[in-house]
Image (cartoon, rainbow, N blue to C red; front, side, top):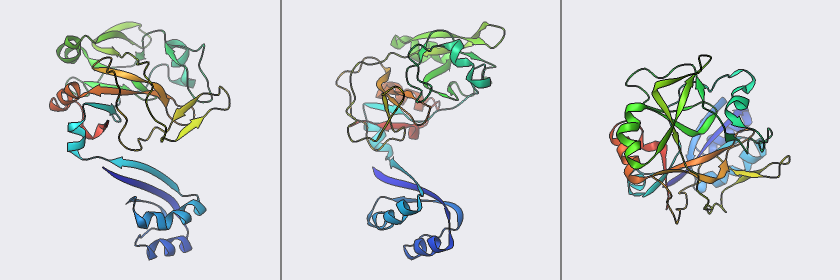
Length: 260
């Protein structure tokens, strides 16, 4: 594993000169990616002073991912928005908002089916997520019957927006949530001044710690992740299921973060 940084800034001429002395050519609005090493720590005081955007992320080898017995999803095909999408109207329709905090996004509890405009064309995006919804997965019914149903994973219907009839070719996976705490003491977190809850930075900082108990082939974390008004629970998938989805070319290997 390597730790890298994606640094973005609207570089002024004097800033560009300083960066050039350290081996980086930047001008105007530009981004660079560098490994976390001595050079990075030399320029970090400048980056902090300039308020440059600095996103820290891990880069794993394929072997590290393949060897992991449990992985967290950190990528997916997307297919449209939950409906209605005007003023986030899907929230009232799909979720119980009793414990929901508008400020940080924590507390949503699904009460009804998701509505979408249409489903992906046949043979494409057999497994997808909706924009704004990072902790639910939708699959075509043939994939569900082939892969997920034999593992004891259940499904929910998905409705066609405005017509209120269930799609025959797509279902939502019912993903259980673990009650086990994940050891994330070294991960940056964001506190909410409105509800006093917190969530962890969405970008992984390295290997995720492993769970003592794997409650299902696919399950959600107890903890929330996200930034701003977005909050979601991280989805974890066991090696056998992950490898099957990659083998079927439904998922990409770099969409997974290994545990250790």
